[in-house]
Structure formats: C-alpha cells, structure tokens
Image (cartoon, rainbow, N blue to C red; front, top):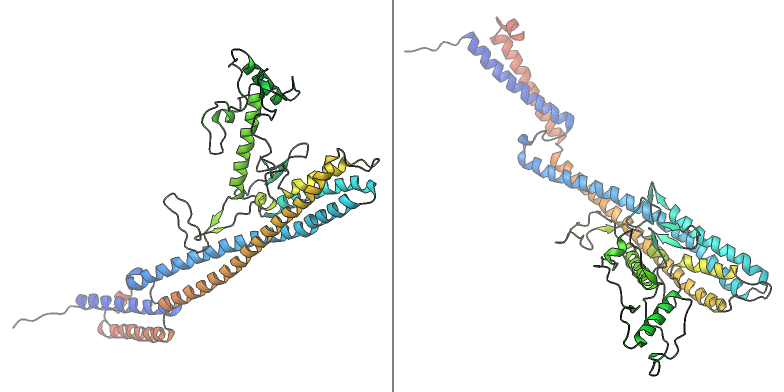
Length: 440
C-alpha cells in the first residue's frame, strides 16, 4: 500500500492560493458596496456591460443635443427681442411719422427735418441688426456668423448684405428702344432721335444707322445681343466677368456687364436668404445620397437678416427692403422745397405716396419674421423639455442596469469577509511553525 506525504511547502502553496481567492472575493464585494456598481469591468458581465455602453452613449448624445438646443434657444431669444424692438421702436414710428407728417404736415418746414429723422431711423435699424450678437457670432448673419451681415457704401446710400447690394434687380436687360416702326423711306425707326446723351441709346442709334446703309454695315453689333464671355457660373455670370482684370469695351458691353452682375446679385441674395445652418437636436439627423440634410431631421438655426428686411426691387423699380424704403422716403423729404411747399421734382410726391404703402408691406414681412422666430423659440422650449425627460429616462435605465442592490451587496461582503477571516484563522493553526515566514 502506497502512501502520500503532505509536506509543509504543499500546504503553504495551497493555503496561499485559497487565501488569495478569498482576498479577491472580499475585495470585489467591498468595491460593490463602495461604488454601488454591479460590475466594474466588461469581463464581469459582458451582456450587461454592452447594454450599459449603449445606454451611456445615448445619454452622452442626448446631453450634446441639450447643449445644441440651449445654444439655438439663446440665438432665437436674441433675435426675437431685437426684431420686436425694431418693429415697435423703429418701423412703426417711421411708418406713422412718414405717413402722417410727411404727407399731411401743414407746416412745410417740418418735412426737411423729418427726412433726416427717417435717414437716421434706417441707419438705426441696421445698427440693431448688426448689434444682435451671441458671443462673437452675429445672430442675423445667416450662414456667415463671423462677419457683420450689413454694411453701407462710403456715401451711405447703398446697403449691402454679405457684400451684395440689397437693391439688386434694378438694372434692366439691354432691350430695343420703342421708337416706332421702321420708316421705309429711311430704313430707320420713325421716332429715333439723331443723337442721344445716353450712351446705350446712342449705341442703338449707331446700330440702326449701320443697318440703314446699303448694304447694311454688319460690323456694328446689335446692343440686345449678349457678348460671348464664356460659360455662365451658377449665378448666371459669364466667366470673363469674374476676371478682376476684365474691362468691358464700350457702352454695349458695359450695359451687359452691369446687367449680368445685377442678375447674379439677385441669385446670390436668393441663396443667402435661404441659407441654412443645421444643428442636430435629436430629431434623427439624416442625409440623402447627395449629402444634403433630409428635411425634418435637423433644426435650421440660421437667421438671415436679409430675409427679414426684404431684398430686390418690385415691378415699379422700388426697393422691397424696408430700410431702403425708409432711406428713400428720407431722401425725398430732404429734397423738399419748403419755400414753394412742393416736392421737387413733382413726381417725387407720387413716389412718396407709393412708398408709404410699400413700407407697410415691408413691416408685414418683419412681423412675419418675428412670428417665425417666436414659433422656433417655442419649439426649442418643447424640445428642451423632451430632451430633459429623455435624459431622466436614460439615467434611470443606467442605474437599473448598473446599480447594485445595497442590501445584497452588504450581505455578500459580510460573507466574503467572514470567509477571509476564517482563512486567516485556519492558517495560523495549520502553519503555525512557518507563519512568520509566510507573513514576510
């Protein structure tokens, strides 16, 4: 019969192994009590850890949405306050004053100072629009929030939005003058003057004279035929006109160059007025196959000032921009003759009355922008509440998944501590002769 001899070294190694296990169990249960967490590593519970990672990722994204929402909300509040001030303190007073005093003031001497008041009002509106800032960002800058959206020309008569004339659309396409039918005897339009001080009209006179020759002189270009200046860009401007060194040759090319540039400015203003600055507020941000954000999946926080004040000209050639209407009303009153008590020239009276009605339309546009901004602000308030509720829900889910039951954790720790203490006590009995060495 064979025998197996248990040595002190074997007992010591086994004891050390078991004691390390007890120590590890006690340390783990103690950490659960201290941290209130069910697990502290992925290996402890892979399924729960994966789910927890997804919840925490969703919580982090939701927190980002709240920050974006707060940023957009602040911008809307600034815009709403500014537009309200402009409407009540500037637009309404300018419209009332221009209509009641400019048209009906029995004292002619009061109209000229009123012109100065209206000019200053127009400048004040632009100062208010440029002064609306959120940090270093211009609120009404559209897609360019780092530069002042509105600027004046050096003479203070032309208003620009992001460098584009807000009165774009005023230049007419070079067209044939209405000088009547061609006279068979002369081969010239029956009402065509012999010459004109207007360069474009003179170009038409030269063209008709060249065509009346026998045979016709085809070297003189027809003013209504556009020059061949290359392919047009997305704004309809030929490529040669985009060359800073290009100079039009003669009045015909100058007229076409002015027309192309003006039409390009109209398209630029359309683009600027509809510029978008999309931000993710938790609405499921998506892009289509062309990389364009799908409508309804992001919040447009852009506030183009040009869209709120208006731009371009109408069929009468009058500005649609409320500031430019007020400015023009001021110019007309500046030229009012207080000695004769008449508008000079006389047709300015008709223009003044016409612009009064159009100022009301511009005011309606501002009111509409004010209401749109208020609507956006209300949506942001509701969205903020939704995001906060979602944060609370995610936080609760994370706690349910990760937080340990404290009573169970304490019970587990007590048991593991008891096992650890028992292991130490048994060790002192079994390894009494080598305990000092073991403790080293």
